[in-house]
Image 1 (cartoon, rainbow, N blue to C red):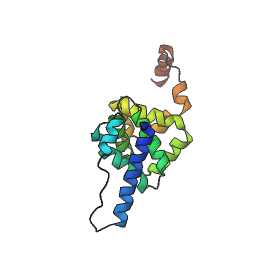
Image 2 (image 1 turned 30 degrees about the horizontal axis):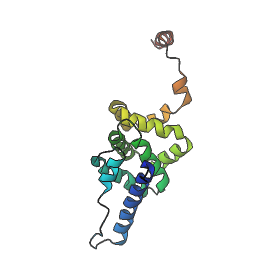
Image 3 (image 1 turned 90 degrees about the horizontal axis):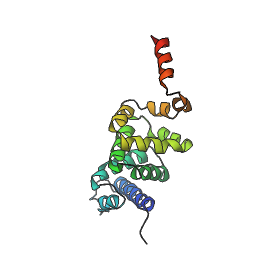
Length: 166
C-alpha cells in the first residue's frame, strides 16, 4: 500500500529533524549518511525536487524556534494540497523569514485552523498577494478578522465610503 502525502511529509520532517540533531551531536566530525531521496519523496506528493531547499529551511527555522513536528507537518501538507505547492512552500519560507518568532504564527494557526488553509492558498495561488503578505506580515491577522470578510462589497457601499472619505 502506498504512503499518503501526510505520511510522506511526516517522514521528510522527521528526517530533516534527525539531520539537525545529528549535526549538533556530531559537530566537527564527518557527516553521517543522510537520506538523499527527499526530492523524490516531494515529487511523489506533487512538489518538485527544487522545493527541497525551502522545505529544509522551513523545518530548520521551526525546529530552531522549538516548534513541534506535528504543526510543521500540517503546514507543509497544506502547502502540498494547493494549486502550486512549490510556490506555496517558497512563499511560506519567505514569510517565516520575515517573522520575529514563527512559534507565535504557528500557535495562531493552531488556534484558528482556517488561517492555515487561507494562507497556504494565497501563498500557492497568487504571487502578488504573497508578496504583500511577506512585506507586511501583520496583514495575515487582518485577513483573518471576520469584519474583513463581512464588508458589503457593492457599488453603493463604495460610493458612500468614497463620499465620506473625500
